[in-house]
Length: 393
Image (cartoon, rainbow, N blue to C red):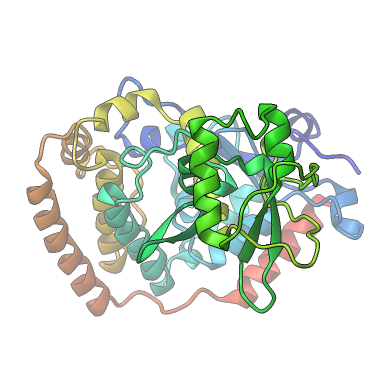
């Protein structure tokens, strides 16, 4: 089962539409802006007629700067009034790359069929999401995750009337996690008993009863207080597995003989560790693919200007659609200068937030009074897709 690339689709004549999208399309690009493109293609015959195991909905590069949609995926997104996809039906001629295939022209000739009140939720929702993002506490620029933690960083034991990390607890007593044995406590979620291999510890330090260091005295005193007994230095190593290994992503359990006394009990916040790993990976991907100019622009600001720009643009477009003006993607002769001023941090956050409330109210009023059609005709879209498939086959 072959996975097709951009070149494969283009060479087979399956690309029916390609255009410039993003800030260059809207007219809000600056000198450092990338030129992003999108395209619509028809899946190879074998992907359509077979079981669809190798069907490709999308072909994209690593940064998603160039993204092509297969026709069925594209039509389904149109039915959901996806803003990015709906815009593709209203691309100015100077932003279209190459010739438009007759199949795509059929869609463009019927583009008004896809403009309905169903646009309001995705357009407005996207705008509101940008408000949350532009100053959200989860912005990676505000909360970098530069170091990868280990499971023990999310593992705690009792300390006084609270808790402390098990690493701190062990270090204070001169103990090592490598000599610990963990046993899960039945019926208690992520709670473990911790046992210690005294023989292995003493073997490493090569000490006898007459050569005990201050470190050993500290941990022996601590242990004696815990179990009301005394350490037998002559006990051979048991061979506990330790709590974790290097680069481990989970705790390790050990077999422990009956009658052994735990040195403490721990609780492991596994869900917290899983979330940290996800946040760490997302941050590293963000660092790898982020736009350096945008990063530097927002580094010393208290909001992300590009999120703010998109918020204003989407609210304006939703208002225009509601008023029956159509889908106006090129903002050059509409509000381009204002959007560029927003992008260049010309306004303080308080002014931006106040203006967003005003624009949001205007959008909601326009939506409430809109007289455009209610829904997209699903049957019409289905018949159109069948016609397109037949034209190609």
